[in-house]
Image (cartoon, rainbow, N blue to C red; front, top):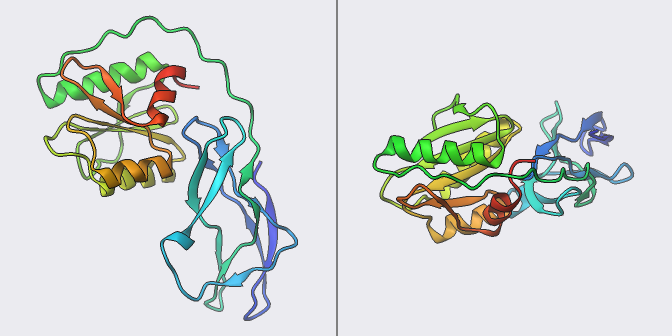
Length: 226
């Protein structure tokens, strides 16, 4: 359950009740940043990319993922940085993975085949309700399942940093985990950012078998949906 703290604006002295949002870990467990009820809120006077994010640890799988730093907007115009107690967050223990039959790939000859191969793989992992995603991604094709948003990129160019971040941001607004499938691989900065954001990356070979690119994908391939 999300926790709440009282936050006082240092400029006008108004009190605000802030409730920490829940974000989806890649394993499917909701996580929340730990708030400090005795801390003092500070005004945000300048911004940088590093200051916009805070690492939150999932109590279920132990993964630490960066999420937006908690903030409150005061009616006086001051933006308040909510004090944090730490990065660790406890959550329910993970479910044991169910037994799965051997994966049967779908040979890829077209963009449609790539989407089908990714959907078949997600179903094999245990995801239910697979369908076309409600929002169309900037690149490739989006598919969704219960608690998951996936992007399939059948183009001949590597997926970019922007592609990975757009997928992650869309998934965050839908309180879902996310995964990326690409035929042509990933740019180095896209791979690095995916590791930070907790996005599993797969490359689809022409046999239709997704190949894990990062450790998050390795874990998802081994454990399946939780």
